[in-house]
Image 1 (spheres, rainbow, N blue to C red):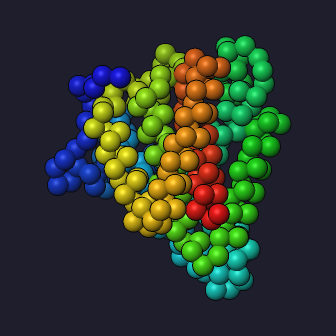
Image 2: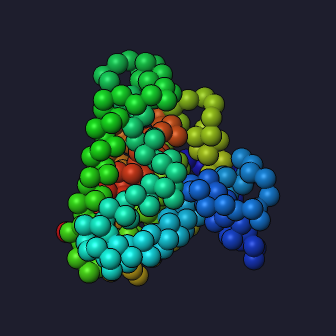
Length: 258
């Protein structure tokens, strides 16, 4: 993909990155950002390279929840509280995308019908199974993580959102309209590399070699899923971005707690 010459360029001024991280948090979480200007498409596009940084903040917010659970009730409660808080902080945004994606791509219908199913707000059987599986796996991996559980909690949200950046930059959207096409059309090459440098550096600094291995596994798994969904749907949607984030987080947790 060639570089685009419009609103997706990273902001390099003093307040540019801070504003873009705030935009990413406003888009990806329930954390209020009253100091930001009104939300705009240009602002959301500029926030894309900072999605992994928003993931780091999400992980940091989960740490005191985990420590409280550990202190009061032990590893099982710690894992359960972190998973619940994780879903609340992100307002279930990516979990909703996961369920819609699995309902669509696992229906074995025509491409057009799959996209219609994904637009339906109701959760079907495959969507429910996917939600239960992801939540159970997150709980299981965190419960068995041992004393270094905090590394997994910090790194997994970063790598899950890095998978989003990879999908947005390198692969086409499935629909003509919508935010997914705007993201894909306006994101630039420096956006992706900025997100990648942050995500990989953060993973290695926090978790060392395990962080690097987790990042490579998330990238490989995301690539395989994306190829499948592009073949079936003709491209990606906002729902598939959410599914990639959730599955990427699970893969990261599996690698980091192995």
